[in-house]
Image 1 (spheres, helix red, strand yellow):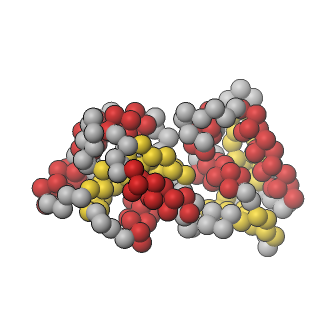
Image 2: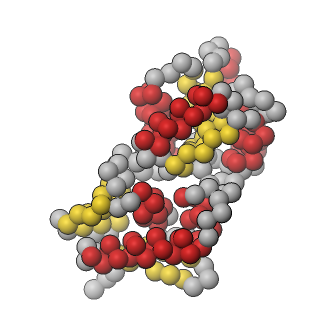
Length: 226
């Protein structure tokens, strides 16, 4: 899962980034409203952590702009403001939740999981199942019929993306944006390398699951029927 933090308190943004990465989320952070809106409009994020008081454009304006453009990415507002009026304004404009500073790490993580469940995503602590394989994103383990392999982080993130795409074709561009970020300089051959790694591990496990290449289009995860 990829999360965007829009927070002008740089030290808080950095702390949140480290906490979320420790819990196996991919994270980007920006420190002003305009950058926050530009990043959020890319559509690559599964959730936004959005401060209300921001330079250039406040969090409520970002929220209004996103919802007006049909972007339904879950938003949790982070703010030092605790007045009821601020909570009502945020929720009325389409926020999914509201956390007043200071907040505990455990509370924020729980609210993130809840927001992702409401969206219909599988949160990282759960096992992802497809065919006869099971991906445990919390400990980066892939299991199949009693056999188990340890994945590296990017392998796990790539397989998670393919599983959650529910057999839809996923392009190399979508993979790069989701795993490395929309402004990354990662090239297509990096994707091909990780696809190759995953295919070898699926073969080793004798999984009835394969990654099919649709030339010029992308990749799709499929069950192999006998």
